[in-house]
Image (cartoon, rainbow, N blue to C red; front, side, top):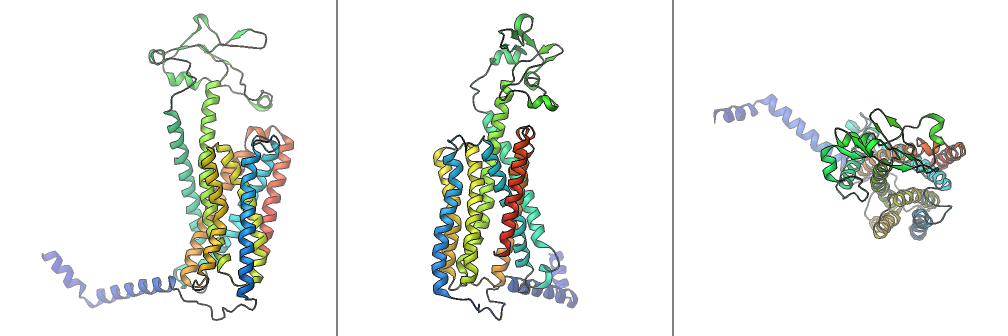
Length: 415
């Protein structure tokens, strides 16, 4: 009890008590100023304000944005069965590069500056909002968090797939445990047997060692000359290798898992900022602001939907899951607009509370979109073997990438 009595007596020291009181008052003052619902703008009456015209424009915006979103996400899903829009076709790759440019510009040119503007507004207390670059800091944390989710999700999916029974297993459990693996035998076009040793058996120490060497190593220009879907085997000391079907299966599962994670994380990033966009459109009462937003958001929604639809199509979800993901994307911005219309009578977008929430969400969305565009959309396609072996596809993809980024960036003039 003596310790608590000493602390209690210490708390009554004038210096300690005054500093504690000052600190608590400062925290309360900061919270009240940052989360206040009052308007900080003395001239919040817009010269272009027209509630009736704005309401009809919002209804037009809901219908237009919904149609654009449905069309964008449906083209890769429905058209994927057509040859010219198949996810493996060059047209789809070039169009996906355009959509990646749109998403990259959305994160850098639209979301990040909007988040910074909201968090450095004069409506917020200068300490700490104006003393530290919170918007890029939050975007950086969001990118790192997306990287973590991307990695963990991919690892989880791959381990889940590994637990499934192998449909094309070439060896039995007894042979694996004994370290004796049958040689993979194949025939070339002339009917000659390759990948075969005396007795037709491999003697290896571990199954992992056998699996690790069941691959090929094409390098340089020769890597582009190998026929798609076929890998020529090679010989190691003590054992030989045939066609790497098992590696193809493993890479296929890994690639499939990547597409599953990418589509889900990309939808999360798109949906998070679509809510803010729709809400901001819904609470606006200025036709001068709403008119350019209709065209800009329709363009933005269409190509974001195209990129997301392509990822969903490559992930090969079941029809129900793909439909739910597509519908959830398509309705997010229209629903946000409808909610904004309902809140417009009492929601104050100029209040410190609204600015803090909007700035944080915009910054998080910017970090997610920038990461997804650069890593999972651009790098995944532009650093692939297919792109490096096709100069025409390279030129077309780079052109559409810069075109999409440029057009989306230019929309910042109006919206």
